[in-house]
Image 1 (cartoon, helix red, strand yellow):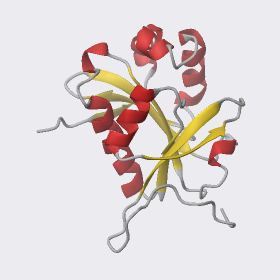
Image 2: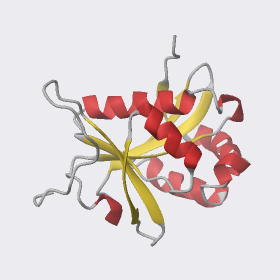
Image 3: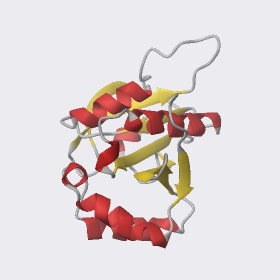
Length: 179
């Protein structure tokens, strides 16, 4: 039986744990300097734009944040509807690596967002981060195009769409003219 995942709001008390995770090699390879990243979290934690959570199974083990995909002017999300949600995440505790937890909590969080009204949830991993891409695919995200993001680096846009009883998702949709 898969574990139940809980998504607890990030508090200042979580910063030492998050900083420690950000310094680990498997996270540091894809995220910036831990102090810089904690500064970004501090800037957003009490705002209402970005929802930051610590992921729990039997203990805290990951960080996930979601926000309106168009909130920061990210060009890779320009084609999406205004109500689309984007996720950024990392699995921090190495004891949880390679055990299916990443796909499990990603599926659980994306499902919460879709059930909450988002028509689509997106992620944008580095195209060379094969471990993350595989976890996103196991969670149900579908790979789209490799495109430049706001800093010019290439990202792979991946989508999970709300399933409708009478239709199937064939993958990322084409941009709509009114989005």
